[in-house]
Image 1 (cartoon, rainbow, N blue to C red):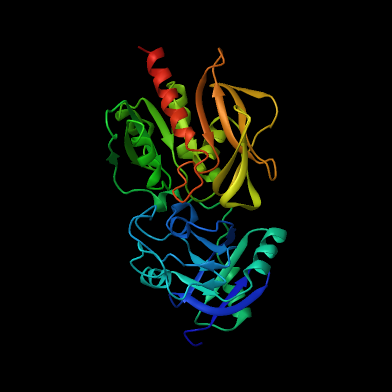
Image 2 (cartoon, rainbow, N blue to C red):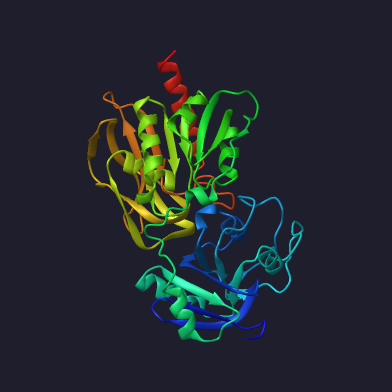
Length: 378
């Protein structure tokens, strides 16, 4: 098979032939689509995309090249990349190399020149599924057989594969107001930066950390990050979170951290048909009545009742945010017997380095919660 030809095969047998984009070779993962029209560099480097082959719905990708300031982690995490029309030449004063060169340098196999609209509609109607991309084998049946031998995303325990090897600290910007222990389940670089801007020393801890490790930081509050995989597999982290709630520490979680918060409160989780990915998802904040345009990357969701509250050993749990496209739970809040907020989480990404920034207030909400909790214990 020549360098300029590539083959994509879905687990249900649908096949697309196009041109190689990025590295040569073969890759497998879960096929998902992202609706963002910008921010592809942040998408590629988001650890939550580990073991996923991302299909871009925007037709023209790579226009602004790649720079060294925008990555959300130290490497590209997507398993493969699918675009319709890659930019032939990047055009940005910030670009230091092309997207194609970056994919090649990091060994990411991709495909271009296919009908991404047809592929997206297929995934939307039939659901996210396993996929393979190859530049070395033109036999669709042979590639299909290998696709069906790969592990599905459901049941995948992936946080330990993307977490930091050692703890590190992102210091507060300006006067230090609080200390927060952040469990890295696949954290994006901009998240501790946003916390630090609120005067918070952020101690980023590996996903394997115990409750004792968290408490050793002497935190004023605890944060759980986004991350890849099936939340039903993360029993250890859920137990740590229950311990955090038992100690009465304020909690804030995003994405995977929202799903684990749901589990810690006694709710279940389930796999969405095709998930929410992109930077244009409408969400209602029920606590304010405001609608936010938000950045998403999740294939699982919390199974909690949308109306009313649920009594838990830690307080009363309520659904605080809802997706306006499909009524999926997009946030949870926990209040004590006096109705005071003690912990909360959202299913989306308020750090949103590539935008939008509608949800940036959530970091302020966490800082306010830390201040309130500190005042109550003074």
